[in-house]
Amino acid sequence: MPFKLTDKQKVLRDSLLLNAAKHSLIYGGSRSGKTFLYCHGINTRALRAAGSRHGIFRKHGVAVKQSIGADTMPKALALAYPEVKYKYYEQDGMFLFPNESEIWLAGLDDKERVDKVLGKEYATIYENEASEISYDAHTTLASRLAQKVEVTTGPDTGSSLPLKSYVDLNPTTQAHWTHKLFVQGVEPESKRPVNRFDYVFGVANPEDNEENLPPGYINTLATMPEAARRRFYLGEYSGDSKDALWNRASIQKLFLRHDNELPVFRRIVVAIDPAAKSIPGSDETGIVVVAIDEKGQGYVLADGSGVFKPEDWAKAAITLYKYYKADCIVAEVNQGGEMVEAVIQAQAPNLTVKMVHATRGKYVRAEPIAALYARGRILHVGDFETLEDQMCNFTADFDRNGQGYSPDRMDALVWGFTELFPGLIEDRRDQTPRQAVAEDYDPFHRPSQGHNRPATAGMNYEPF
Image (cartoon, rainbow, N blue to C red; front, side):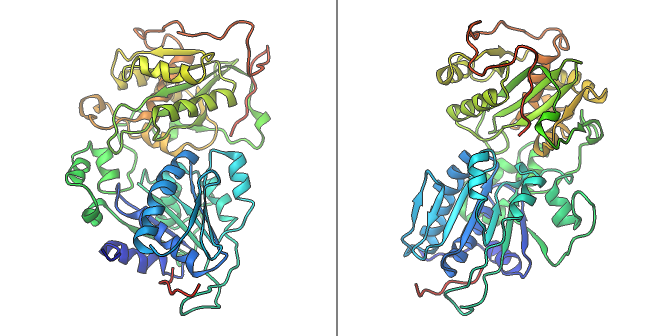
């Protein structure tokens, strides 16, 4: 069949990708064709300018390789440019085209990998699923949008290929930097107006891409609970729920200039809430690192949550355990039971793993932790937008009306702090660790007095 974009993709191409603006955002519901359009645009730009370089980034390296490298990019090339004989170097995460253009894939969670990739300059930077990307990371990526390269084919041969920054996401709350920067038109930190001619945005929703979706998928999104429905079906930014257990004012943040500004921690825990289902909005595994210092102050150090297979979320949790030199992994086992324990122990048999069971609803378990926030007893070390969105949209009726959607990150946070502040939930089953580290075995060389941990050609292609 001949290749064609959907009607909505054509509108977005003409109004955003062909616009003179350097920065463009497409937000909207799940599977609305946002990622495909941007990948098609990058492929076209790479083919038009020999030797050009383009970068695609997500929070997690595993996710960008699975979603873009193994899925969307090959599909976009096969449909639009089947004649192009490209090579994909999976280990490096790099597509190489016959004209020597390159498309690099990287996860922001791999510092060594990111440092290597960001050592280059790019003609295009694409931030995929930007709800998980911090504003600080966005500004760092923008600094690498600097490759000067000429167009080598098409009507404008010899001209400079315009620099382009692409961003997409399923929208979260209006507090997210993408809403402030693109929709409100203000720089998120200084609050000063930006050049509105340089920042453009568009909206795409599942019904705009219905011809490419399986039967019943749109109805699945349309019948989700309201918060998930707004995000994944209507594709709307939301304000904080008025009756939510948390609010933004109660979430105090600590921004560090250097890792050594962290206090000495008495305990550090990696908490896991394994995914129970695989429908949109509920297929993440929550992985959050929390700590408590000698004075009883709690800290959120990292959010490693994401869409993972069991062996992949286990690897992610173990990596955080080692990096932060944690004392134990706490895992909720109402979903998965013995599988949760087994998948962790299979990869790291000497880790301390504690299994916990939910005997009360999410709201009841979360209330004592929210009270700690209200008293200033917990600090977030940096921004955790997606986690905070879940917290500030979690209401008392969740346990009655929340079927099909789970705030996995928030759940992991609650389990972690329940472990660090024992006794807050009276009937919580505080089980003995199934597997303890031997007394004379300390693979991570922890100091004896507390823990100081680090923070974190000739073919004509349409112009893009």
